[in-house]
Image (cartoon, rainbow, N blue to C red; front, side, top):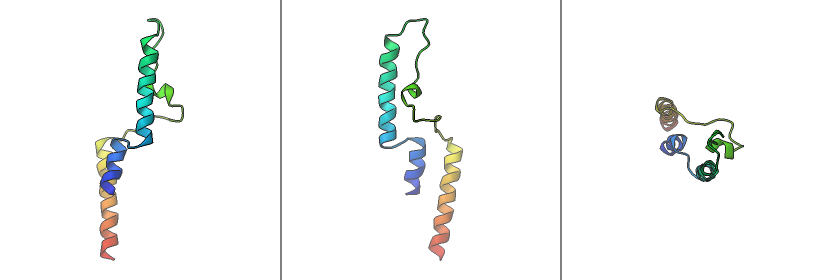
Length: 78
């Protein structure tokens, strides 16, 4: 389970990922027809429920994963 949680932090699974794909398509289609003087839209412009990008660096993911593993090791000892 901890491996899946860490993987999901790096590569979102499920509806969040599907919403991102839809945002990519919407941004590409919008940018295709924009005038050169108009700034391009971003994927996040089509995802208003997102506060900010939630990407974790590899070091943070490993730290979280090691924390989960230590909790499970303590639980197994009891």
